[in-house]
Length: 95
Image (cartoon, rainbow, N blue to C red):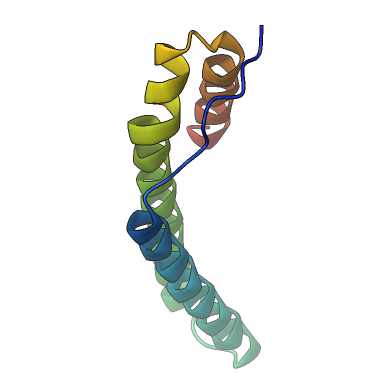
């Protein structure tokens, strides 16, 4: 049975994640410009690898925040639906 546990996060941590995503978007825009400007493909691939690493880091930060707050609460309230939803999200993220 689904229970509506509190879905609260630490606002400071969420702001850090949002800022991280903003920087990531800027980095990806610069990679796009590299391609538009005809820069060397090897350099572009290195930057794409850096962007992928940044995405993974942002995902890990969000996962930690969610586990620290929402999932702890879901376990406390025996909210199996929220726990299973998180398991599916982790499976997708880890592909």
